[in-house]
Length: 120
Image 1: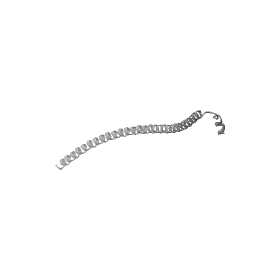
Image 2 (image 1 turned 180 degrees about the horizontal axis):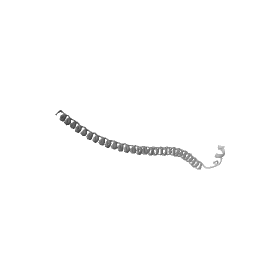
Image 3 (image 1 turned 135 degrees about the horizontal axis):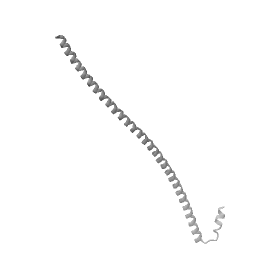
Image 4 (image 1 turned 90 degrees about the vertical axis):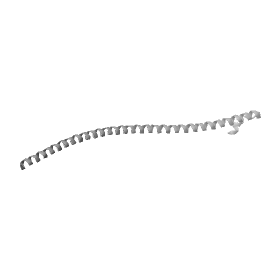
């Protein structure tokens, strides 16, 4: 088959044959370069897709973390409110204890005074 491809070149001058050879070499070189660039393009496209997937995964993870953070902030707010309520309740109870302690002391003094009166 290659003899048929080469047959059309018969009878051409050496200068023309040299030019044809140079052009064929250039065509082969350009084909190799095109294949190489096609491979590079495919490699870069694969890398781009991988990066896009990575970005998408990180966006999803970021959204999940934002939701989790919001949930934790709400939980902290609720705990802070509960803490304030408990602190207020504690103050109220301490006040009641102080009042009752004062009443107890007053009653003790009354009892002592009454005991003193009875002794007289």
